[in-house]
Structures are given as structure tokens and as C-alpha cells.
Picture 1 (tube, rainbow, N blue to C red):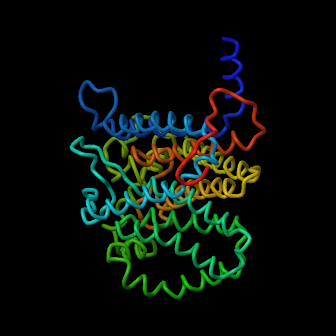
Picture 2: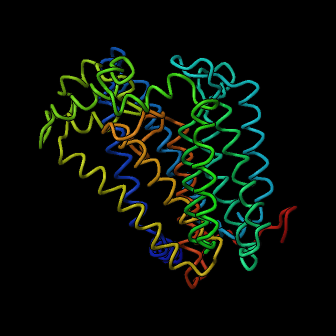
Picture 3: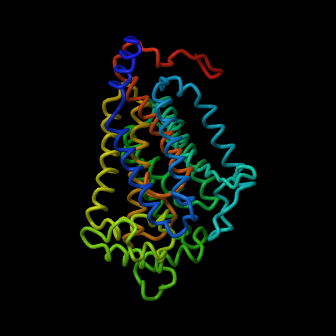
Length: 393
């Protein structure tokens, strides 16, 4: 019994309690707000709505997966990179063939239906974690040759594969997040500034082409609506009522389950893309500050862990996770504040969604593993650090 207690103490001591507690706190707050936003859809006799129940189950399963992954030496996970990359790509190809889109975008193929269960999975969420892992390993393999142009090109091709697949599926929001992850990981890898300037020049040169041939009329109008909202009232309706809801909350908000806009279901997608507007109305400026403070705390913690890591690939993955969370946060809140066009991206931890929350915690599990196994280890019965795989010993 004493041996078990000692093992548990060591396991607890080696866990990144700050990251785990911040993540759990964010998810708890997110589930509470989703339950409030979807109260009107709750079936009689049910404690929670379907969206809130799905999110609760996804977070619970995600936390379990994160804790299990945290006890697996991340070096063993690195050996599975070919498998991880292959599975993620196969899921994305399957999505392009068999995928279905949301009711508002039936032309977009972003979800896979899991049999006849009525459940859906969004492979692009798992692909984000897979990309962070495979790209970190790729950079590590060519770290000493990053000054060579051909390796920059190969890294760019590596990034363009998931970006292209996600963009073709219709998920432009996730495609933008991949771009953010790519840029941040390349920056922390020490890629020369001249390559970033070349990339910026290329983007600027391609903007007219993208505006004319890549974006559709609705997407172009969403950009124009930011500058001329009175001319695009229909396009800007979602953002405008979201802003009105936030203004309605004031400093302290109208209280959970009491927001007049939120409870009336006036703000489209208030449980997903526009969840920040619900926080603003029901919990006010103070609630929004808490939401942002937790996300900033998680991002800073990931960067700190990356700086302390003794493994370059592991450090880059920490930066990649931080970029994913920070990037989605900036895009989502910028959209809610009418600073950016509606692009369809969730707010990490807070928005409803089983796929996004489950896959986020899979990534957090890897971060916990990096934190645990970057320390000088004491032997415990919980660690799993000896595994032979087809991809290396």
C-alpha cells in the first residue's frame, strides 16, 4: 500500500498541474456556458442539452486520454510519426469523399458520420495535432540545414498538404490556423528572417488572385462588410447582433441563463463560433476577462514548457500547441468583435463540439508527457517507456 502511495505521489509531483488545472477550469466554464446557451433546446426531463452533454462527455474522455498519454514517454510517440501522419491523412481523404457539411454549408465536407449513431467527427481537428507532431519531427531532422533553401521548400510542402486538404474540404478557418502554426514553429526553429520576408512578398503578390479566384462572393462580402457594414446588413447580421449582446452585458453581465439575446437564440451559432458573445452578455466584461486570462495562462504555460524542454522537437511541439490555441483565440474573438470576418473557427475549450474538445485534450496529453519526461525521472510503475514499434526502437 505504501509503495502505491509513493508511486501516486511521484506521479502527481511530475504532472504539470498548472496546465491541467487551467485546461479543466476553461472546459468547466465552457460547458456551463454552452448549457446556458442551449437551454432552450434542452429536452424535457433532461439535465443538459444534447450539445452540452456531448461537450461534457468529450471533455471527460479527453481528460482521461490526456492523463493516459501523459504517462507515455513522448519519445515513443515520436517513433509513431509515420503512423500518426498516415492516419490523419487517410481521415482527411475519407472526409473529402464521404464527408458531410453543416446545414448552413452543405457544400463543405468537413465532418465524417460515425455509422448510423448520429455522431460526427471532424478530422481536421485531429489533423492539427498530427501536423504539430510530424512538423516538429521534420524540423528536428533538418535543424542543422535550415539555412538551405531546399529544406525550407520541403517544410513548406509539408505544411501545404494539410492546409490544402482542409481548404478543399471547405474549412477555411482551420486552414488559417494551420498557417499560424506553421509560421510560429518555423520562427521558433530559427528560420532566417529573409525566408519570412520572401513568404510575405509571395502572399502579397497572390492576394489579388486569391480575392478573385479562391474566395467566393459571400467570403468577399464578409471582408467588405467590415468596412461598409451598412451596405452588407444581411452578411453582418451575425456579428452585429453578437456585438449588441455583448454590449447588453455591461461590466458584470445579466447572469447565467438570463441573457436576453442569448436565451432568445438571437445570435446565430452562439454555442460555437459566437460563444464569446454569450460570455459577454451573461457574464459581462469581467467574464470575458476571465475567459481570456485562462487562455493566455495556458498559452504562456506551453511556451514556458517549450523553453525548458531539453528536446528540440518537443519544444517546437509546445510552441505549435501554443500557436494553435492562441491563433484560434485571436481569430475567434476578432470575429466576435467585428475586427475580422466570420470564418468559422471555435474558441478553444469554450465552444461546443465533441471533436474539437477531444482532440484538444489529446494534444494537451502530449504536452503533459513532455513536461513529465523532460524531468529527471524516478522509477514508477505508471510510466510506459519501453516500446518497440515498426518505425524504430
